Amino acid sequence: MELLKERILRDGVFRPNGILKVDSFLNHQMDIDLINEIGREFARRFAGTKVTKILTIEASGIGIACIAAQYFHVPVVFAKKVKSKNLDGDVYTANVHSYTKGTDYIIRVAQRFIDKKDHVLLIDDFLANGRALLGLIEITRQAGAKVAGAGICIEKGFQEGGKIIRNMGVNLQSLAIVNVDDEGNLEFLK
Image 1 (spheres, rainbow, N blue to C red):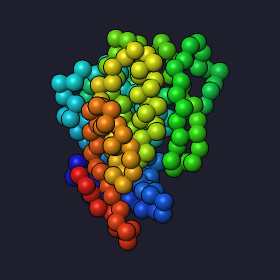
Image 2 (cartoon, rainbow, N blue to C red):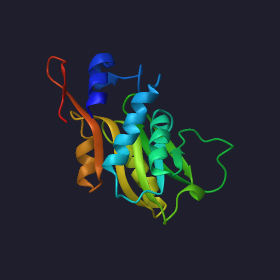
Image 3 (cartoon, rainbow, N blue to C red):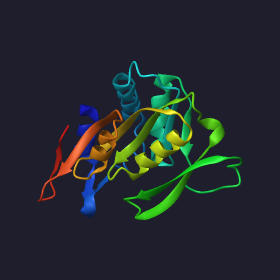
Image 4 (cartoon, rainbow, N blue to C red):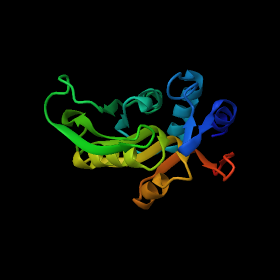
């Protein structure tokens, strides 16, 4: 998606250890016009795919998932990272490792929100090592639901996540796949 690539080049900041900061427009301060175009692009890429729910992880994926959901006319469910008193009843859980935060956590989704009738589109801002997406796939499978596909804004092509998810047979659609050469220069693989 050219609009996203242009914005990454203009406002993205690459840091050591494979960190690409896009917090000025995607996952801290959000450019809603850009995210609306991202939602429209996911709708185009998954056109003809039966989608009954969109699933993401709090917090960065929520805004993107909500905007995308308006094109699919389906609810958004987000996996919670912190156990709370408000999350009552039976839950699906999965262990996830966050690359950027360097920590492990358990994500949770109330079982009443996803079931075997659902076709779940997974949405997130980044794909690096694939652990978050694997957690969402695990929750979807625990529910007996079908993974309709996965929509990612930015995939780090120099990390293994995309390969892992594609090898599972998941229809993975990344809007921008970035790579970093030996001198730290950013390039797009797609």
